Amino acid sequence: MIKEKIYKFYMLCKPKFTPKFTISSKMVTLCIEITELLTELRNQKFDLKFKEKNIARKIQASLAIEGNDLSCEDVYRIGKEKPVLTTLHDLIETKNAFNVNKIISNIRVYRIKSLLRVHKVLMLCLVEDEGLFRTQSVGISDGKRIIYRAPSFELIPKQIQKLMK
Image 1 (cartoon, rainbow, N blue to C red):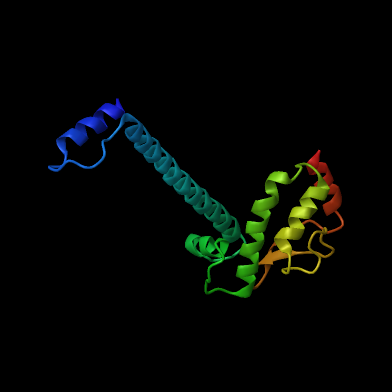
Image 2: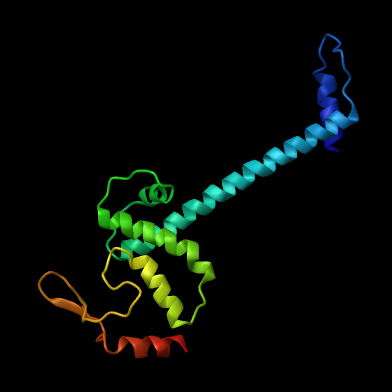
């Protein structure tokens, strides 16, 4: 079907002069195969860029919860190792999130060791005890008063173990 359309198109656009070669069915077949391969390659490039943009969007949304105010485009640029004007903390946090995204498919869920491995990658250069359960109390304040106090650090290993079951 496609060969017939190409042949008809060729006949309509047939040059006024006669070339020193003739178009064979083999040449038409090869042109079709080349076109199909180029189309497939373009689609793969599109799919890769689409996937990269979605990863950046996912990372940006996760980091925004923690107060990182980078845009999706900034996060995408950091993932592509391009310069972005931001704080060192936000840059490190974003690069760490991309590194977690690279290893997450190899993580064995419901294992504390795996959770701590992800924590280590995510918190690298951001906290002193990355990859370990916290050893001090933490909370969230609005500047004047504490609005949320996390469970005591002594309870964390047992609660995580219970969660993993």
